[in-house]
Image (cartoon, rainbow, N blue to C red):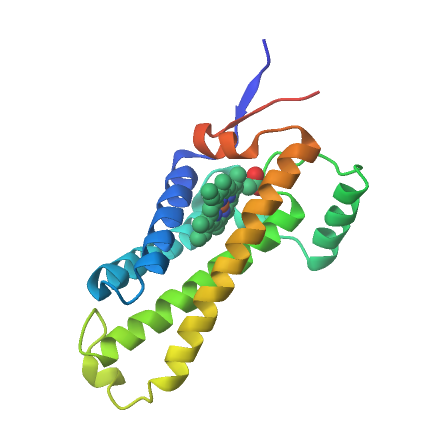
Length: 185
Ligand code: HEM
C-alpha cells in the first residue's frame, strides 16, 4: 500500500473551490445581474482576506513561508520542467507559488476596485460619502483590466497544473479535492 500525506488542509481546499466558483460567477454574470455580481465579488474579497491570514496560521503547506520563493527559483523550475529534470515539490512548486501570489493580487485589485465602484453608486459596504467625489473612470478601467488579467492568469494556472501533472505523473487536480498525495521515496 502507498503511504499518503495530507498536503492541502480542508480550509485550503474549500477556499480554492469556492474562490473558483465565485470568481466564475462574478465574471460570467458581469453587468447582467449587478447585485449578484457584487456579492460574488465581496465573497472573493473575504476569501482572499481569509487566505492571507491562513498563509500565516494554516497548516505547513498552506503557509506562504512554504512556497513563496523568488522569480529566479520559479524560472529555474520552469526550465527544469521543460527538460524533464524538475524535483518533486509536495506543496506548491516555486512557479506555482509565484502564480498563487499573482492570482491573489489580481483578484484583490479586481474585488477592491469593484467594491469602490459599487460604493460610488450608493450600494455595498463602503459609505457613499467616502467615495462619491472620486472620478469613476480610473476605477472602471482598473476593474476591467484586473478582471481580464485574472482570467488570463486562471487560464495559465490551469494549463500549468495540467502540464505539471502530466510531466510529474501526479494528479494535482485530484489532490486539490482529496487533500492528499502519495509519499514517494
Ligand atoms: C477548473 C479550474 C481549476 C483547476 C483544475 C485548479 C486546480 C488547482 C490545483 C491543482 C492547485 C494546486 C496547485 C499545486 O499543486 O501546487 C490550485 C491552486 C490554486 N488555485 Fe486553482 N484551479 C482551478 C481554478 C482556479 C481559479 C478559477 C482560481 C482563481 C480565481 C484559482 C486559484 C488558485 C489559487 C489561489 C491556488 C492556491 C491555493 C492555495 O494555496 O490556497 N484556481 N488550483
